[in-house]
Amino acid sequence: MSSRRSGRKGRRDADHATHQRVVEALAAASRAQDRDGVRGLLDGTATLWVDATGSDEATPGVVEGADETARALCRVLRPGEGTDVVVRSVNGVAGLVVRHHGRVTGVVSVAVRSGRVATAWAVLSPAKLRAWNRGDQGPGVAATGGDTAV
Amino acid sequence: MTGVDGPTADLATAEQQFSAARRRLFGIAYRILGSAAEADDVLQDAWLRWQTYDRSTVRNPDAFLTTTTTRLAINVAQSARVRRETYIGPWLPEPVDTSADPTLGAERGEALEVALLMLLEKLTPTERAAYVLREAFDYPYEQIAEIIGHTPANVRQLVSRARRHLGEERRAPVAPEAQRRLLTAFVAAAKAGDVAVLERLFAEDVISYSDGGGVVRASKVPVVGRPRVAKYHHAFAERFWAGVDVEPADVNGYPAVRLSRDGELFAVLTVRATTAGIDRVLWMMNPRKLAALSA
Image (cartoon, rainbow over all chains, first blue to last red):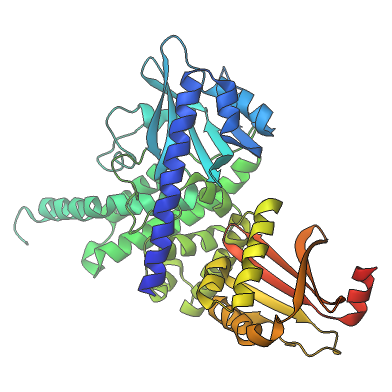
């Protein structure tokens, strides 16, 4: 029982290391605006899901295939004046956070399979990024004391 | 405690108890809902109930708060379902920053990654709650039963159904070249009867089927589970493989090998693999079907 659990943990640690490496490479390639580099990190059948409801700048939808996904990901992770892409812990694993003049405008999570990105999920919907722009308050901090966290 | 400060002191205690549990309560609600905003609302609600409840009747505040939070989250999940159906474009879970707390209030970081939260969306809210309490927070089945108002047997069933559902979805098939490599490694290990290597190649729930068509002596019942399937192949290794020619083939799009002795085809072996390893081994030894394949 315990050996099975520690075996599972060992595998998970290895998976997390690979995951971290791929996410960092993705951040570096997008910072360099290297679309071929981004495409090289994707599985041939990669898909990108974009949740952008309520955003003025992005369109929600799903794109499929390495070419389309690379193009769309580069658009989501577009570096430029006042914009940067950093690697942060998102939902327990490494993910990408896009900030525009310090304000979080997108959070991208990925699933890595055999060392490549199989699926990417981009949340650009402002309503879902509120907690990321709430200063130093972590999730679940605003529950007592009548704090209406909007 | 019964002095003039009684009610105030009591409220302070209530707040302390709530604060101590808050991270875990948020972790539970977030995993059930996939939304930090909705989880915040649930916690707000749970706090109001706790504040106004006759707390002198509560023996275990922590259990009370967990039960209240879980049930509120299940209710919200039920109504959220409809809203998500009318959401414009794909609905994704609200991401949470876990730099400070990688496991988000849980014993283990289980059921937190976006990939898994997306899969959890396919479960009913009650199944989801049972799965989360068991897998991420290590609650015993008896306690989960009390929390969600089911029998322990029922909860076991809910959790195993959820696991099965997620296990099937979570595993991705591997590319044909990788399937071929696994098959080659499997044949080598089976020939050598190497139990350790076989176990490493198999998924935990591997099943080996043999089809002898009632003509050829072969195991009639499927052999199930990593150790048993490994031992099974070890048991007949020595006599079986002597003088056998192995050549690669393709069966229904899966990599396979044809086995023949003295130029006569007597078996076709196929394996299916996912990211968890080989999960199906098929021994086709039925003379009628083999005749069709050798054509």
